[in-house]
Amino acid sequence: MAKTLIAFFSRRGQNYVDGGIRNLAKGNNEVIVEKIKAQLPDADVFRIDTVRKYSPDYMVCIEEAKEELRAKARPELTAKVENMEQYDTVILGYPNWWGLPPMAVLTFLESYDFAGKKIVPFCSHEGSGLGGSLRQIKMSVPDADITAGVAIHGAAASHCDREVKLILEQAK
Image 1 (cartoon, helix red, strand yellow):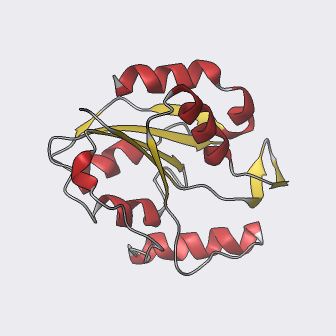
Image 2 (spheres, helix red, strand yellow):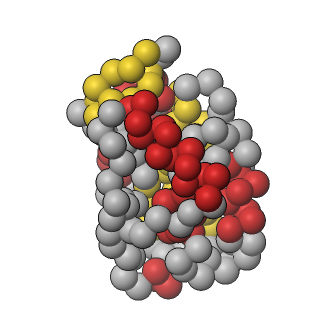
C-alpha cells in the first residue's frame, strides 16, 4: 500500500511577509502542511528541524542562513524519519531562501535513499516563486521522480486552497 510523508521546514516567529517583518505563531509552511494533512489524513508528517537553532531575530537569522549557504553547510537535524523505505511519495515543503531550499532541507534529502520515490516540492516565498530550488533538489536526489512543484506566496498561506489542490494532484 502506498504511503505518503509530508516533510517540511518552517520558521515560526519573525518572518518577512508582504514587505515587512511580522511575528508568526506558525510558519507559513506549517500552515500549508496543516491544510494538506486535512486532505490526506493517512499521511505522516515530519518536521525538518535543526539542532542548532536560528536566531529568533529575523535579520540575524537571514545572516546565519546566508553563512550556511556560502559554506554549503548541512546542519544537523533533531530527528530522522524511521522506515523511510515505507513511503512512495514525499510532499516536501520549505521556504525559498535566495532561490534555494534552506540547507537543512538538503541535509534531509541527502540523508535517505529517494531512488524511485516521488517528491512533490512546494515552497513559500515572498516574490521569487520556486527560484532554483527544483534544480537543487534534483541535484541532491537525482534518482527521485520530482514533480513540477508549487510555489505559494507566503502571505497567502492561510488561504492557499487552490495551490494545495495542485500539490495533491501532483502527489497522486
